[in-house]
Length: 152
Image (tube, rainbow, N blue to C red; front, side, top):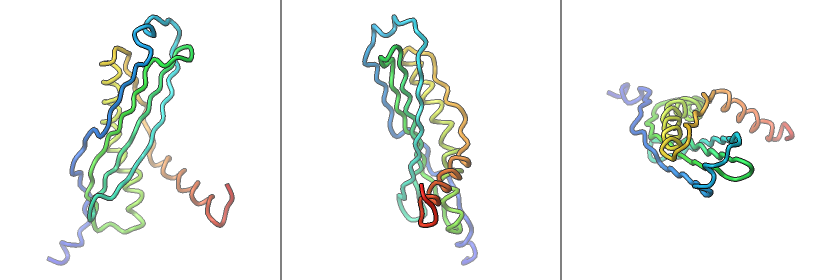
């Protein structure tokens, strides 16, 4: 019985849309613009402990689309999941939270962003695939460079 208590656990408890916003500040006149829109996409990642061995991991996408310096639309979507992670060595916990969990959540976020753009009367915005491992490694290198051994 004691051995069972030390078995590593990684389970998805729930996936959910945490926040969603669509703004079209210049509608309906912006629909008459013929110029090619400029699309700017920013991604954010959040991790919050929510209990013993439970973590909320969220991925946020902010999509700003402009035409001739006027906002066509702005979408902000935050997709999240609650993950149960127990009996994992501490040095493996951060990569799981920073790579594995976002990889599970991200496809749902992509679908939400595409869907809300279409529902707003625009062509879908298809978020590209993201290499969360490369993002995580870059973040680790940046943090190491900011430490006492390196300069920014």
